[in-house]
Image (cartoon, rainbow, N blue to C red; front, side, top):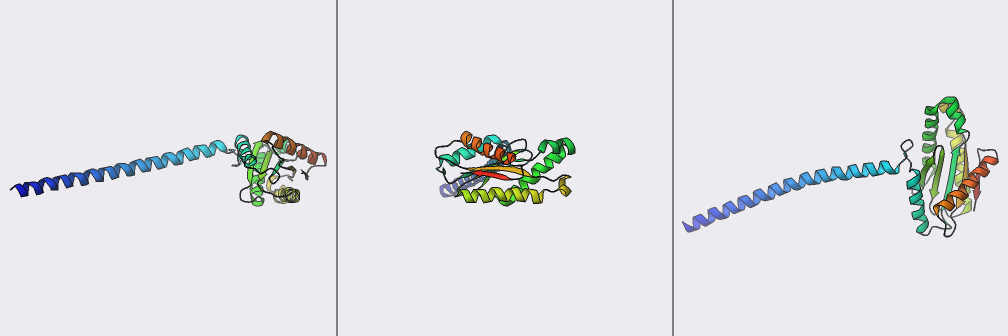
Length: 208
C-alpha cells in the first residue's frame, strides 16, 4: 500500500511538473511572438525616422551623424563627399507641377543608387539638394571620375520623354581633410557645387 501510494504521488508530481513545463513553453512562445513584433515595429519606426519620406534615402540629420561617425573613425584623406542638386528645379516645379518635381527626385535617387558602391551613403539635405559620402574613395582622381559619371548618368536617364523636360544636375565634390567635421565638409562641397553652377551647370567641380 505504501509503495502504491508513493508511485501515485510521484506520478502526480510528474504530471503536474510536465503540465507546468508545457504552460511555461506556451507562455514563452507567446512572449517571443509579441517581442518579435515589438522589435520589428521599433525597427520600422526607427527606419522611418532616419529616412526621407519621398526618396527613401537618409535625411539630413541622419546623414550628418553617419558622416561624422566615419570621419571620427579616421577616414580623413581617404573619404570623399559630394553635393548635388537639380539644375533649374524651381522651373520644373513651376512649369510641370510638384508631382513632376517629385518624380525627378525619385528618378535621380534611383540613378544614384545604380552608380554608388556598397557602403556609400546617400542623403537628402532638403529640397532638390542631395549628398553622397564615399568612404575610402582613395584619391582625388577617383572622386572626380565618380562626380563626372553621375552627372552624365542623370542627363542620360532622366530625359524629356520621362518627365516632360530634360533634367541635368550640378555636382561639387571634395576629399575629407584632417580633423574636419561635417559642417566644414559640407561648406567646402557646397562651394564646389556653386562653382559648377557658375561654369554653366550640368557639370561637376571637384576639389582635393
